[in-house]
Length: 452
Ligand SMILES: Nc1ncnc2c1ncn2[C@@H]1O[C@H](COP(=O)(O)OP(=O)(O)OP(=O)(O)O)[C@@H](O)[C@H]1O
Image (cartoon, rainbow, N blue to C red):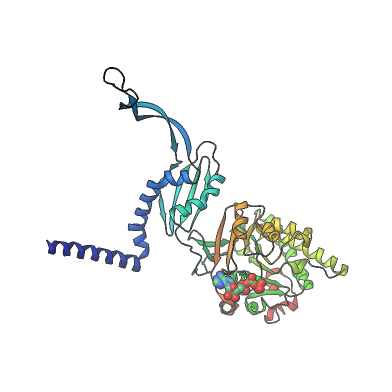
């Protein structure tokens, strides 16, 4: 008897140790093999209670068998008030119905599932309930994604994938970079051919420069021209100069470069018209011009005026930047505009420019207006998520593309040294500014002989 008990205990201990080791050494297969099926069973078993607790159920009248106490009457009843018998009978009763769940599908960090809305429900009801559902399921977060007619998809994430981000920014594909991770565990990918212009907002120390570094590191190995506008005296972008075809550090230089770019865009437009192409990607490969990515650091500096004498220059800059943004998508000139504060007080130029920057990234910001300017014309839930970014997680942001969907994301930390190294390693890929635009602004690339 004792032997059998020892054997059973030994087998249980061995099984527990095996499961522990499996989970420890191969968490991914453990999740798909053991963790997810158990979670799925729990979700199906508890869904009615969870939905009821989160106010997602509806009451319906349904026919049900019920066991009712019926007073016994007639000769069998000596005291009709106390003698009862139980009878099963069909009755219409009030039942609580949870929204119908679809099949749970595992993801690397959790699962997703479709839920059929009750009549009268809207996706916003599920967005409001998401936090309650996350607590009930003991998961990091639940998000409503993929809204279709009558259905929503809920995406549950077990732990925050943004605590530690490790990805390589280089994707190997033209005009595409992988700056970090999204909250659902997927890679965060920026594809300039899909979303050409980006607005990156964030308070000081929120991770803007790091994101710019990651983008430079990701784009540096690609056959394209990088251009920097750095009105903080060039301190941010000068270290990347070997990979920059042009760098402007004063507004006058920005105006000159923008003039070149507008002229180049007009030239590209004429070439496309001549060849019956709608954009440069429709041109024969040997005629296709080099793509240009223009990074603007601290955009407010471009629009701030110390006195009236600068008014003209500011107006010129704003108009040229707007033209570049409007024509850039078709003719392969892309904008990345960074700023701490992007308020309407900077003038109408900023508001008009913002409308052209369909990609948005909002880090932690100090003033609600900047968050509203960055994300306000998108889903209000994105704005709430941006306002909730804590100071102790630099690099965490809310990113939204032009399709209106948004995600919490975090950039991978590369630091200045990483981006500088990439700029030096790929300096040989830097086209001279004169080559890019057919002009020559001598001041801009003194270190590249053919630009001088
Ligand atoms: N993705 C990240 N992961 C981890 N740490 C990060 C990340 N991004 C930034 N940091 C940390 O936060 C600090 C501030 O980042 P960064 O310089 O990019 O902020 P910033 O918004 O550009 O600030 P400023 O406007 O003052 O230049 C960095 O020194 C770095 O240590």
